[in-house]
Image (cartoon, rainbow, N blue to C red; front, side, top):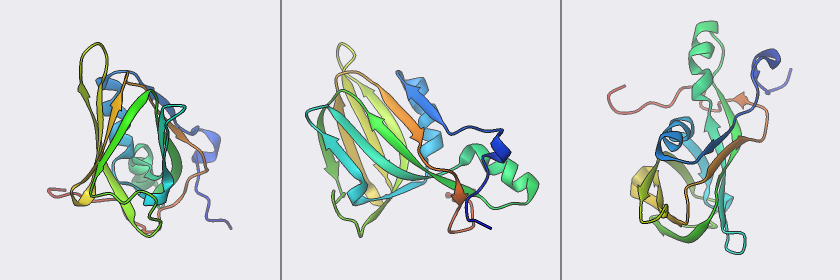
Length: 160
């Protein structure tokens, strides 16, 4: 028996979503809520103007099905990539620190002039990453098979 989880006997496919506006970004934000990643799994390629994270994403889209079937919750590794990134700022984040595990709470877009703006990645513990973008383009792509969530539990928030 392996620790790989399902994708429900092939009925589901790995996620591959693109956000080009705030509404699209809200969908992706909900799917990456509570994703975790070590500080060394984020990269900014200045030449290609791309900022990317390798996340261990809780599969919110599968949580009700897991509960209904009495099976374990799942996580999956996903790449979250931001295109046309002109600058990156961070607060309370140690980029490159493999020992620090960060938890992503939400994504938001602050529009600027002529399609430019800032994407803000809010992190647990008052950390944040702010990306100055020429245009909003975000891609979320699952890159591994799901695996059983190590905690065995669904993330909880105040008021749950």
